[in-house]
Length: 433
Ligand code: HSE
Image (cartoon, rainbow, N blue to C red; front, side, top):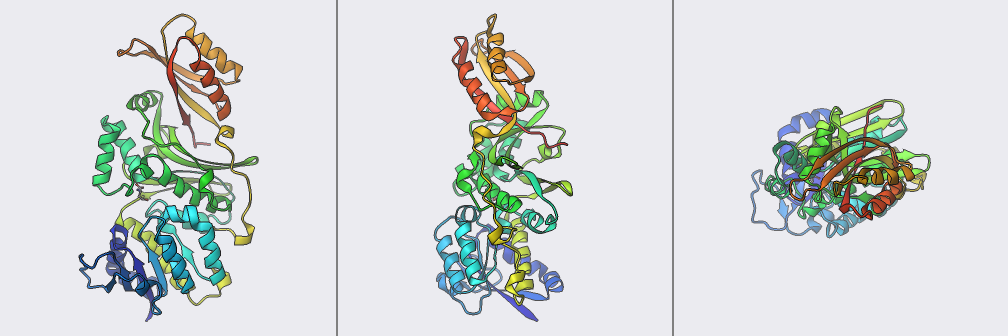
């Protein structure tokens, strides 16, 4: 029996899932791959922990990174350092690498892939995006005959859990976040979840693989959900929309849009019905059309399922010619494109606006006049009276326009004498057609 000798860095939720899944499914894995997946060594911070299978643990990371018996190092520690240095050392010692570390791939992937290519090694990261959903492999391999036009994903389980709780149960943002932390979904620093950084890491990776561009995390527009108000969730609902925290990437002739923000989606669309901690990624490709992948975006065993898929790929390529390896970012390394990433002001979409105004004649006509001056067409509008301050709440949706036009209009509207406070702006997307 051929063995794939595995070293693991970290023994948290995902690593436990990997160990459990290998033990549980070893016969199936061997039937499929022809290999026994053998866990040679696990690097832990402390030996004082549960070890139900009696695996070989070490607190010396070099027992994994420099171990001559290990073929693949699986990094499941998260964070940038020391994970980055450990992966570099593993590559230096000719180990193939698997990681679930989205932050690391999004911000240091370009240099790591360069090093892996120089060493002729595989560096796989299916588990870094959307947990158990096989979205990297789908984009990189299954859709290879297509040109990817756009993708949109609910790619942070914590954020989706919070929005679902706020909408379905009218709970406050803070309450729902506490739950998500207690359930173990949130990142060590939950601002990564609620401010969209975690989703932006994942979107950076997806956009690179979809369009064949280098990883460019610093160019992603990021807006979180922490400033979302229950009021807007309710108005959006009245207007026929659900608000989801989406990562969106679109390939346009003038450049690429890459953005993470709360988004109104028509309730009738499948992705607007993805609730709780579940993730979904909708890809639009020119041959197949839309493809929607749905599943658990976080958690031990679901994420481990993606790690095992990378282990299986590595086992199949261990003795192969290196030229046959699947390219790291789905496109040949020398064929990555320098298509520009569009500044957020240049994106083109529809908008939801909520404006507070003194309820007097002429206020509405002043607002619509400014929008007309910027060539912005209103789609629909409702007005309610706020009990607290007796002000009118004017809620409107617009047809598609450039973001800079809507921002310029809002600055002019906010400067009107009868307008109170800052206007609320949210973006609308529809994926039908
Ligand atoms: N904190 C992440 C989430 C974990 O909630 O989606 C999976 O990447």
